Image (cartoon, rainbow, N blue to C red; front, side):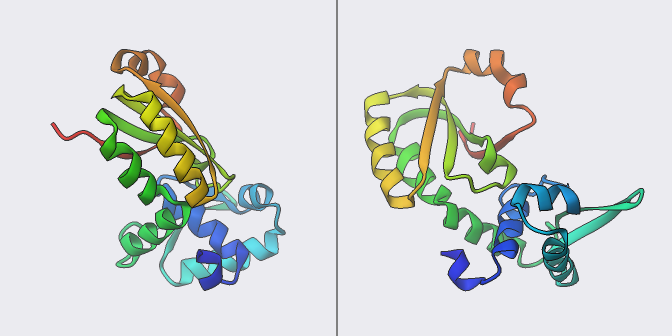
Length: 177
């Protein structure tokens, strides 16, 4: 969807990387290796996004570190487009709200890093009807054309595994108390 609006595949990858999880910070060479693109192609797009104010750069030694500019007026809208492109909005609406007692839902793995690998790792915490969940996941995978791998945990299990997820998660839903 987004690639029909934005013709530069490198720019799309950068938007996914930085706007899906605004905590992501990366260097030019790191991005080049991750995307399998030349450093020049990535540099051109980084410069365009930085000039537009969508990305911020910070010098660290001889290299520049890039991240999303969360204060840019278009940040919320671009982030919404990115999450819709990945189908995360549909995932939240169609799965979490219909499952019963969900305390927390987050994405981990590649998508939490802003990498569109085709596999969404979803972690749900709470008392969930697993048969109903599987039925919904089967339908959603067809709709968003991505594989969804789900892990269902209790609150105690999450606490025991917290360190495993701490550095690499994107909270998509949390029960309001």
